[in-house]
Length: 263
Image 1 (cartoon, rainbow, N blue to C red):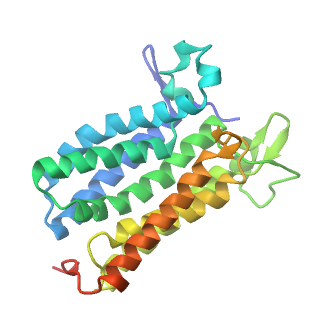
Image 2 (cartoon, helix red, strand yellow; image 1 turned 90 degrees about the horizontal axis):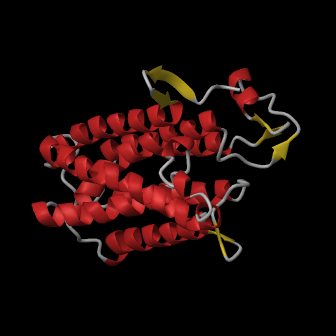
Image 3 (spheres, rainbow, N blue to C red; image 1 turned 90 degrees about the vertical axis):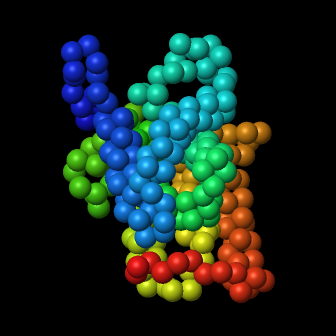
């Protein structure tokens, strides 16, 4: 088993979980700054947004998790802030981040759809990296399996939990997000018919599809009235993404196209 603590700085323990999240954030910001130059969004706007969005997204991700695990946290209130032990729900972070983005774009007079497109590649990459925090914490796994011989030894050993091998659902989702990131990076250069918001619509559909399937494999899903909450949110995201893209390209085909990516 890998120690979830990467190293100590005096009295402070630096967890692998935090390293994965912060690394994903840094790469997402650098990528957004690069993308923003093509789409007319300054690096100052991106950095200012992150200063607001990141801490509030962490709070939102934790609140979301705590709300759906309240039966535990009502008896352990001291654990509510223990985010270093895991328990950040990505959907809570996405919802919080989106609300901050709506407010931020309104305040700055920026295009919400364009800013979302700038953020999507970095978001997908950050999610791919962030899932490895679950690996180090031995969480977000699936059902018991006989063996995991197809995996490298290091991952296989970490997936041996409570006397059994477990489906590495963290790895499935990380791989799905990484593939989505590569597709977005490729498509944004190749398809000149893209319109503002298309990448955001693609993200809703792509992430929703992967998360809906993978969530069904997990054994630690957040539940509401016997229903996996993330599956319902994934289905909603897929529906919203499809309706948005159909409206933009079928029912409103003359909507102004996005500026060229090659400028």
